[in-house]
Length: 149
Image 1: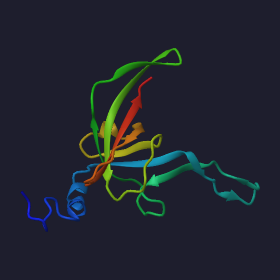
Image 2: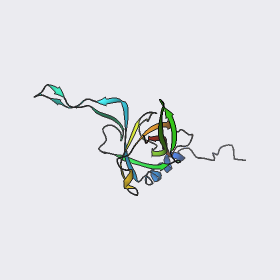
Image 3: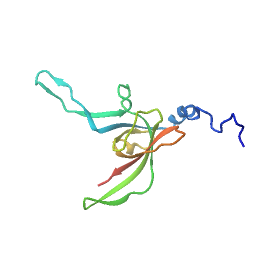
Image 4: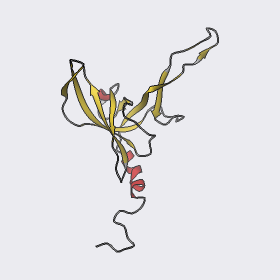
């Protein structure tokens, strides 16, 4: 039985361990919100804007980073589902980002830009299906799906 003035898990335990876990993230990604865009640059000569670009939420807006660290793991084999009368193959992934990353929501798009141990991952795209929560948070876990057609 614990003493009345003690805690099994000390306050700040998650925050203390977060920096070590970021070192396990050996891939890089960009996460964007598909419902928002950034207007293209204004062209004085034509009087029009260039094409809109995705609204990037991770790395944090205003960050110097082109892509930010993540860890990627396939959760299970692909499954076939019917959508609008067509067979669609989906593969679930766990994408982990630092706990202090900006707020990520269901439906956001994750684009992989590089992976130290799996170059095949670069250029891949998954969609956030669920953002996992917990009382201790060393990192933010995103359950994502990849539609394979």
